[in-house]
Image 1 (tube, one colour):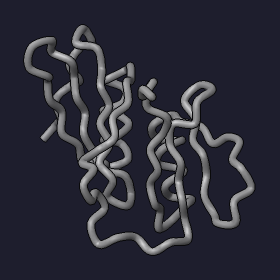
Image 2 (image 1 turned 180 degrees about the vertical axis):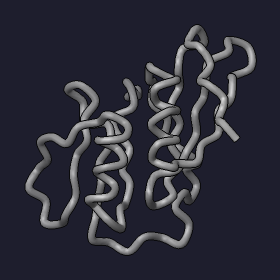
Image 3 (image 1 turned 45 degrees about the horizontal axis):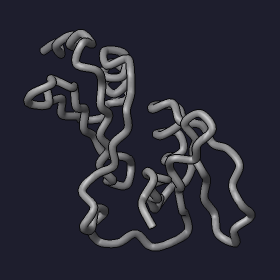
Length: 131
């Protein structure tokens, strides 16, 4: 047996609608086909792949991360993404990866799950925030 790739992450949501707005409207994933489970939730797609499974209707653990620190996605459009986060008042941290200079954008979803978006090093830096 050998692992062939990452299939998906699963997050628990205290408010399914807010979580769907966050991942679909803000980040650009889309809700798609999901098996007829006997609990509420959604499968969110990037292209043809369900990369994020959302489960609602369960109690959230006291710590949203547990032993998993964050989930990361490849992305494009750094400046536009930062502008959207600012517009929706989502706090974020922007870093450059030592070595190749990949942009790393970190923020939390509505229930505290940490998300990382990685952008090509050649993308221009976003405009600084106005004071």
